[in-house]
Length: 56
Image 1: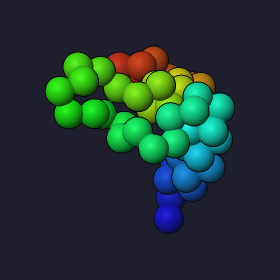
Image 2 (image 1 turned 135 degrees about the vertical axis):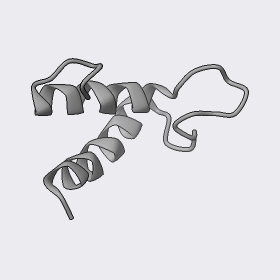
Image 3 (image 1 turned 135 degrees about the horizontal axis):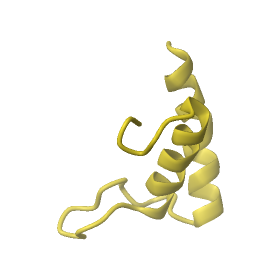
Image 4 (image 1 turned 90 degrees about the vertical axis):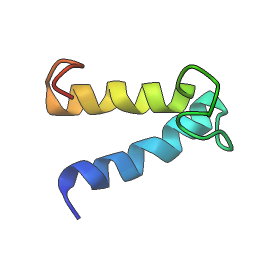
């Protein structure tokens, strides 16, 4: 398991708890967007990697 997958494995459950999106899929079909926890997780990964959103 890579460092990134371990990091995401830790961040996603915390983001789901904080946003209250535990039962929602990351990209709901027909929803036209992403769940809040997916956006929070992406932001945390961007900071962890110290890159832009495009690079992340």
